[in-house]
Image (cartoon, rainbow, N blue to C red; front, side):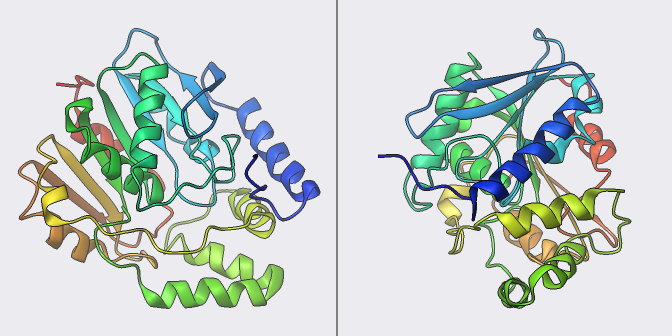
Length: 284
């Protein structure tokens, strides 16, 4: 039986997909799109860069899709074969299936994605829920994760209750509440032209998943012996990056931390920081 739609109405889904298509038409580098099978549902992928370059997987956050990487993909594609992957059950083109976060499903799903793309090991980059998904996979199959880039990751510390309350209130205040919520995600960063309107449209039409991401145990996190880069902002309304760093530092032997003054949960202009960590693009 098919999973129910993650959008409030068919018209809302069409509006969000039209936005997605418009961004893909303006993708700054040549790309190809593909739909690949996994045991948990079909998965949409946008591939860019030299097919012989080291592989990089990009996973977006909740309530969005791979279009969020439009500002970063050109730089990453100079060094890597980049696969921007739509998470299951989110506002992209992958299956609407929403497996239990407490099950191994998301790790199995990403394992299937790598298998379908014929990738043994990859650099894994994730934002928020995408970073949680990377942690779920890398703590299960650490040998397949060359390096991790965790952008304001879920699953390390509890989310701020103040943001959860704000998100609920925004749903009651209609479009004005949605705009205020979107603006709060950027901290002191200037919001690029068109971004606020696009995110507001998605938020208005998308049915967010209820619940909180499970926290990883210390034993889980100690399995992350590969190089790990944690990046976030001081104005993140969802998670406290200093507390995330404090929990990870005694558990991860090869952790690098960058916390950007004034940056919010929706991080912008991070490619310089990430490429500084990754260096030449070697996955070893």
